[in-house]
Image (cartoon, rainbow, N blue to C red):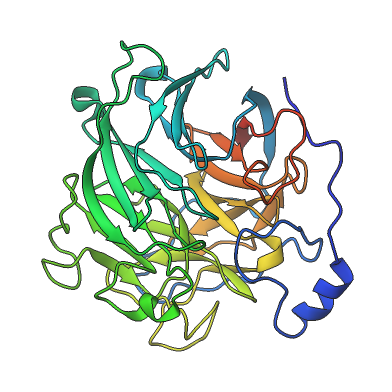
Length: 393
């Protein structure tokens, strides 16, 4: 059954926000709750570095989204999502409860695998991103990024579905630790790339200089081996896990069909960003927010006012990047032409399901979309939070 919000929720203080946007914007860049009804598209910005020839088949300017069904509902503070192979279901993390749950995509049944020990939820921190090992078929390893009392870290656990509910997660093996933590800006997205290496989006925890400090893991995209070691070929030497820097708060990672890496990033007062990630490049924060035109920094491919996006997860499907918006309460489509945006971004589902946290490619023209109304910043209604199956073009 498809469940929509009863109505598009009203934008709070929209007049004041519109006035502020003429000057410095009206967002602190956190997962703010109030949507704006300003623009539904934004200017494009070319990724000046690492460009490649345009694709022969450029997606059309206008696409479509249909909600096929509600896969499950009643989730609490869902954040990370990973699809098990062979139709085995979806794993979803609860940021605040510190648990991982398997969702049967046919019936919607929820089974709690277990609680991840050591999770210390606070603000935007807690149990965040999930990823499956590239060798999952043989090792059954689930990777998780979470906030502890002292840091953000990445662990891996064996998932044994033969054990009783609540006891199916093995003891966590910490593969990487020491990522700066804060009440906000903890990053948290993890994903294995086409090269079978682990990519990690982190935040600068409101300590802005960390983003430009290449010795810090805050405000970065990291690239690691499956064992948590700095990946061979990283741009800043063999002992550095840093892949790109100058980020404020990265919560979305995805690759297109040509293995280009894309990342979404929270802005502060003015511009949220979609970036084409090139190894070793500086993405500008805190010296630049959005398009600066400064050759020292890699400009975003697309940008949005913070009231229209506040992006979290992204996915690639049907020639476009799809970006989930928290404060903006909408799903953005960014059609690609090589390493550039082919057309202006296009918005869907505005206000219909509330805050949108995570979007994952489900094969072909399908996406899984996770809402985020129970994360303390939404206005939850009956059934929140939910996972939706989308058909897109």
